[in-house]
Image 1 (cartoon, rainbow, N blue to C red):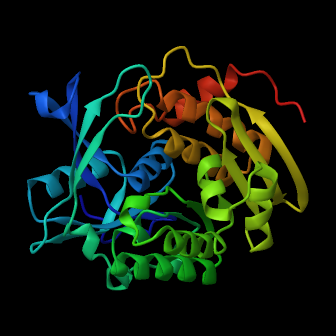
Image 2 (cartoon, rainbow, N blue to C red; image 1 turned 45 degrees about the horizontal axis):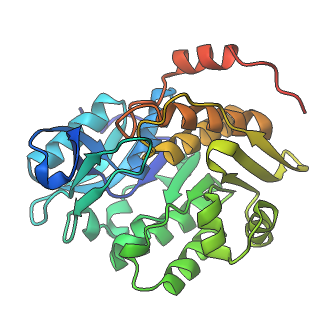
Image 3 (cartoon, rainbow, N blue to C red; image 1 turned 180 degrees about the vertical axis):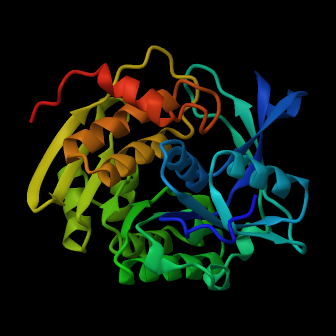
Length: 329
């Protein structure tokens, strides 16, 4: 697929996509014989979710010039992503991960093989051809700045240029403490990046870790004081909390979550939530409508094995939302 003559994507995400092998049966990974192949990456989950809803989404990254990189490219293009900013790196491999089949809604064990990956070599040079003037929205997470120093430089480059161009920015901290040299460096870097964003989307535990504050109200205030326009905090099954000023109106509220009969796989739930919130705000919905859509897609994400299999297309989302009761202020 070529995009050389197509318009630049209005929405852009960036980071590391990996080829994922998911165990077909429960049990320790050392004993699993059969896996099925998917792609993985918090940033790609959100990009795919927005593309399924009809948004023109681009993906910026590096993959190895290998079969796993080809698989990622073909998968993303089949989902409708513009991959003009996806580079094939002949000197470094595509990252891999293996995921156990979890039982009873527990977090599955994951083993990564990403050291020295092509994506870890991302730098601001990979964004030289990005038309920031055409950009409407940038989605960023805290994973690229954790992967390598050059990836962190790319993250700053993307945030600063998108902000200068007037695009809106969403930021999900997506904490990966094991990838950072220290927790202090993680907190300092991600809080500074969140301050560049319009919409900050931490989980409650992430917000407590990053700010040292306890309540959703205070965590949200921390980021609002530093420049964010709205903070939407994931509260797990309880739903989510919103505090911010959009369309000139300041408000705060907690929106109840949707009941789920069986939790199959929690990985990707936060990404589904981000798809819901970001798509709704780009659609012009109210904060309450945005948070409810986030809860709705997040609840769907935990009911399937894959990271992105529960993300709906526009028709399915419309049917789901049409079945909900009217929002009450």
